[in-house]
Image 1 (tube, rainbow, N blue to C red):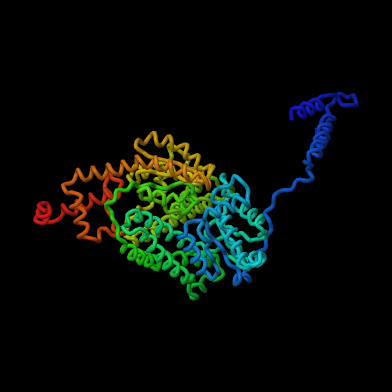
Image 2 (cartoon, rainbow, N blue to C red):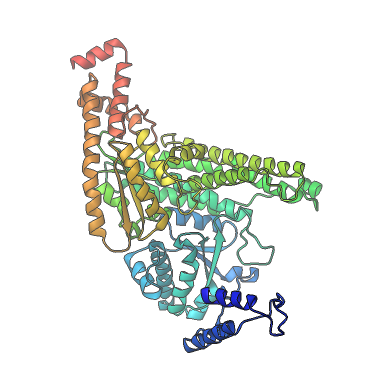
Length: 597
């Protein structure tokens, strides 16, 4: 560039060949001899190294066999990649729309090995496990007698897709590469955008119409699975009969699966649709009616109440002292159950901890809505040619709709929590999460989990919700690793906070478990100290508390809501404090008799 600039400058200032001393005309076609030689040499080097400009080809997304509406009856939609509960309920939601749908089995280490074998190195852990699981399932179909072409023609895989600063945007390409290398070239992979709204239908006769009914079904299934998983982990550490919680949860999931599968899509009555037929209000009215029907329906909450009744039959020992460990990090790593995250949930429970997981769907959607409102406020006043009235009208309409969506989402979450007895913690407003994380992180950085990991760590610590926070993520997950770096500052500002990040990569399980065991030591000590402090502060012995709980078994039920006392984290300590208050509240004669006994 320097040689080219000097040659051009020299040619522009030397005398014109005619001898009149005038500068040559300033035209784009004038080129010095030096420029010509440089260009010639560049072309020679490009040809020598195979970099001819004529050979450049821009990447184009592969053109695959379409999935059309006429193929629905003989095509199975495959999905999977999260917890078995999520996958099973999403399967039912898709089946309710009239599709043949099958959730893939839970991932295994064989899935990881197959994924690594058929695709590139250095990809995300979720990629290897998910595509390896898909390839393994297809290979199993082939071993049972189906030809590869039959498999390709009669199956499609549906998953979420996105783009951004992490490797999530590469998942779809990795899936196609692995499928092609495994001999299933042309296998159809359908993706829906995670930021593209509640209607991504194209208006064409496609096989899978990603319309409002599709996403409302996903919303319902994910919401149920999130709350049920959180409730399961909350009580499993206290089960008296090992395996009893899993047994009941499996039955509950089967019941919810049947309920979701048998649901019918709501359509506005004909006498209402005729009023708005072929008007600009027709589509908004139809959409509003569907959303309001979901919000007003008691079908989902009735299903959760039935689940609550079944879970309340499980025998629990709430006096067990267990440190509470919050799982956070990359959404797949913290949700999957099995080798994808070193089976971290089971490992923590074997080590005597209670696992506290987040509600992925509600948290993510509330974050998206909050971001949408913030971006709208950023553009307020930038009219871009619109009239002032129209500009501000569009702004208030958008913010109003997003605010309405936030309130409806919060209401749905609270309805599910109430149906399970109200013992789970309510959602934290995203404005509060933004305020907490602001001193440490630019919350507008939208890749990965953004400011949420930092805000959740601080919130859970300051509100006595957990003894320890464990952040899990795939190997080299950039957004989560960035927040881990900031967490060192957070830990310094909050004495007593226990935070541990671990990476999952398919191997290194022993080392990761060892690190978790070391961090659990101080967490166990904190939980034990809490219980000792409570027992020394009340006038009842532990045997008195246990005797009262045995006489009043309803307070030991899974759904019983134990009041949270300030400064106390553990369930056993809070329960002991609560039972002592119940004993203190009894008539004086009964209390004196119990004390003499």
